[in-house]
Image 1 (cartoon, rainbow, N blue to C red):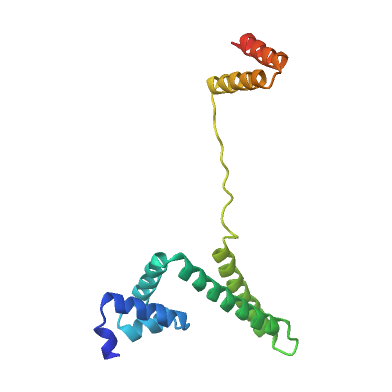
Image 2 (cartoon, one colour; image 1 turned 135 degrees about the vertical axis):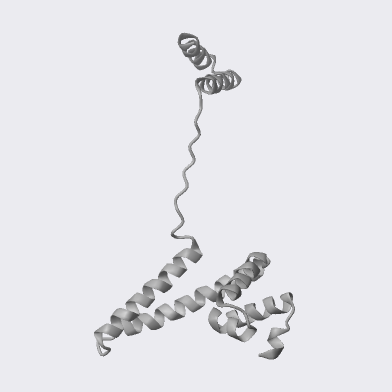
Amino acid sequence: MASDERLTAAERRARVIQLRRSRVTFEEIGKALGISRQRAHKIYSDALRELPARDLAEHRAEELTLIDDALRALMIIAHDQGVHARTRVEAWNAARGWAERKARMLGLDAPTQHRIDVIDDAAVWAKLQEMAEEFDDLGRPEDARAIRAEIAAAG
């Protein structure tokens, strides 16, 4: 469209978001706005990063609904024995792609994070001394003496 070619950056961004939310492909968005498919994708990605949390949550909900609808329709095809076997396999493949997208959106495939704190002997002895003081405060001097004896024996 000729009018789309003269859009300001903000107008172009709004138009990209509007078209994408209408399920228009990045290729079609690029053609409509006179930009590349890659540029349309970048504009959209940048816009998503700047969306307020409420709008982003709404957008995610819309995307998840789309994915669920697509999966539901594909599973009907995949299980329909009256459909050619190749079509059923293609439906399974498409469903796998949608399921992977959903897993990424929900963070299900995120790597597990492990935290490892490395401490030295001085930190261990300091913690033991702290525990001894806590036992003193709790009125358990025998436990405090036992810990201090261990500290002295090791030191």
